[in-house]
Picture 1 (cartoon, rainbow, N blue to C red):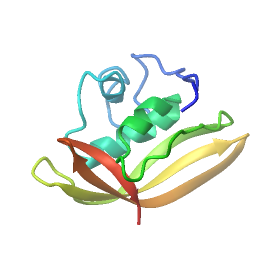
Picture 2 (cartoon, rainbow, N blue to C red):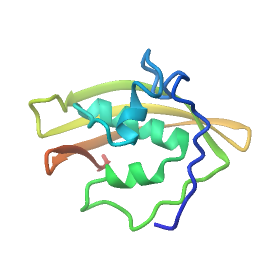
Picture 3 (cartoon, rainbow, N blue to C red):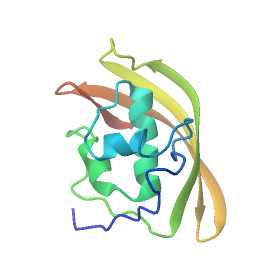
Length: 135
């Protein structure tokens, strides 16, 4: 991956972009900095949304399963990820090795609002949750 600068305008005391009632520093920021690992597939999904939101391409690549991981990731600096809705989860708990998360991610792209909906697959790899792709 080429060096993509973080767009991190989220301070540690700001609300976490993932939507949980915690600050970024107490929530996804800990995962991004490597101080904690996502305990569930949903937690990894939320942390990956937050990584898109703050422009942390390195975290996104680190949490992508090696079999599906792109060689590099260039984030579009014109896209601002604004809100995450978790619609459904299956498996993905601390006792599972696989799980899915269906979500809707809201964004603005150069001022135009939009959203994507995805049904993502997550698997454990070397003990941690990884994003394996979309169904």
